Amino acid sequence: MKTQFKFILTLFVCSFLATNTFAQNDNFKNGYIITNQGDTVFGQIDLRTNLINQSQCRFRADEKAQSVVYMPFDIKSYFFTDDKLYFVSKTIEIDKTKINTFIEFLVNGVMNLYYYEFKTVKYNTLPDYQNFDGIISYYFFEDQAGKMFAVYQKPSPDYILRYDNSYKNLTNFVLRDANISQDINKMQFNQKSFINITKNYHNAICMDGTQCIIYQNINPDKFGAVFKISPLIGYNFYNFSDNYNFGTYTKTLNYNGSFPTLGVELQFLNPRFTRFFGLQAELSISQLKIDKYSKTFEVNYPYFPNETVTVNQDAISLFFGKIKFGFLGIYPKYKFQPIAGYGLYAMTGFDYGGSLTLGFDYQLNTKHSLIFRANYDTSFVPKFLISASTFSVCSAKIGFSF
Image 1 (cartoon, rainbow, N blue to C red):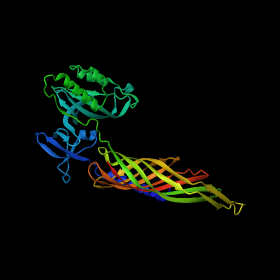
Image 2: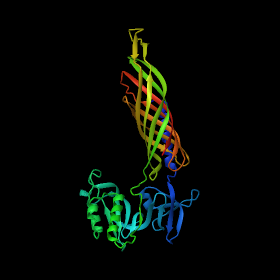
Image 3: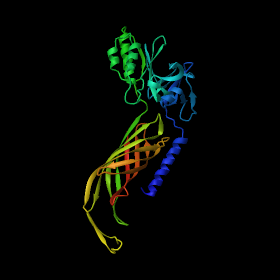
Image 4: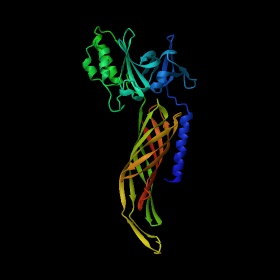
């Protein structure tokens, strides 16, 4: 890659790393808290990862107000009105250790259901006390007497490929007074399955027509992932170079052109983890057209002065597809949101290289944006090739995200 390209890339990577380091990574959503006195106070709550939301509630009355951090049992509960997530102050027990936490409330009824994520560095039930550095999901059932039953899934020795099914036996034991064992044996280890099993339990034991379920999470397994799809239209400005090495001499032929391009940009973000970084992919199609040419070079080989070499190239006219993957940095504080990214691309014809993205999104509302992109793509060419082609594209595109 050219020196200027490396400099621009380094500059923007450093800029966005600095932005993410020093900026407050918040993700305030509409919601309310319920105080220990039973009062409901509306405002905005910082929606972060489960591990963070379990440990604290960061609340502010509005965008201009100073935020206040509540710890478990400072308040009774808090609720995200748009995302429909409900956290309550509760004391749970894991590995004989009592934990005061804000636990996510999934079902409120005759049998309550909660969800909790437990970060651990050792899991003692594994063979030979193998270390497990990660998060274990716990589901807690709570009966009418307030007794809590923990249901969890043990990580396998390889941590990834296999998980045990003993959680089904635990669930069967807890819900043994209802004849739903066949449903339990078919369940999966996720929020949706546990909520459905709890609903089946209530349907089996509530035979008098009374309302047994007061509250139910209607958005299970929503852990903050956001996918944005943005159709794009624009123009590609090509520079196509054929490099010919003749001993100590290198000759280059350059061709320029511009053609329309159509594509779609995909963004993967998780604002609960960070609003400043994400992943980006792009699929696009365009045209490349090069006229037929014939060129004679004077190369002056040692001991053969005024030597000439003729190069012939047939005309090229083709449509090609391109796919790109990379990292994306964004500053999302205002409606006008600057963006920078870097990734790799591959295109039909086996050309591949690096891609720098600059631009901005203009936020129309919480779900839709106008997007403006400028890209610089340049191919990677191995230096050992005797004859090689380099391909660079500057692109200007606009689109709409939803």
